[in-house]
Length: 308
Image: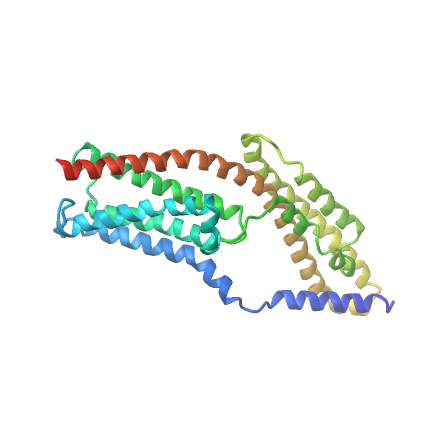
């Protein structure tokens, strides 16, 4: 019974290395960008709302006027992202992800400045001022929703798009890892492979796609419980005949559980991808008219302010 020892030692080494990854500061910085930005935005909104009565700001003159100019200019600058995508010559001016990053950031900073321009008075000015303000806030809210959808179908918030094929390849990788794990026998591997193939049969309609992630969420958790039972039984059987396996039984169980959970989590990710991809496409159809409406109302607002 000396044959399983090298495989078990290799399996334990893989588990040990996976359990203690090096700190990736760049990924940590990218991961913290969104929550830190959200907290700063919330802080600015709370301070602006609380101090609205104490500030002597009017939209027609002074600081309030210039805040309107700055905020409106930032909203117009959002168009540069669309121009960058459509004019080949501008594609040399930095990567698309950087342009998109600033597109989303300006879509938050601009409306916040415009709120300070109006001193958080949603009924100030004439009907054209109110419509322009509401359209700006509508575009900002729509952008926040689109930002969430975008993050679900991309590698990182500003990364390259994740294709369904890439996700499936991730699900089907690590066959060598399976072979070296005494708990992951052919029965367990076959069940994981069958589930991976099943998730490829993605539904076409939006309503069916909405049910797909929930169904696979329940399915994979049930399968996880079943596969762990089978894998633990295999490990226990080997431990009864191998002193090496018996000594490291608990660590083998942890490694097996972690691997099964990881594979099933990847399958759930594939199930979610199609749903969020459809939502993002639908959102884009809605967001563009919102933005056009905001630009038109903003132009009318500026003309009305300076002509009358």
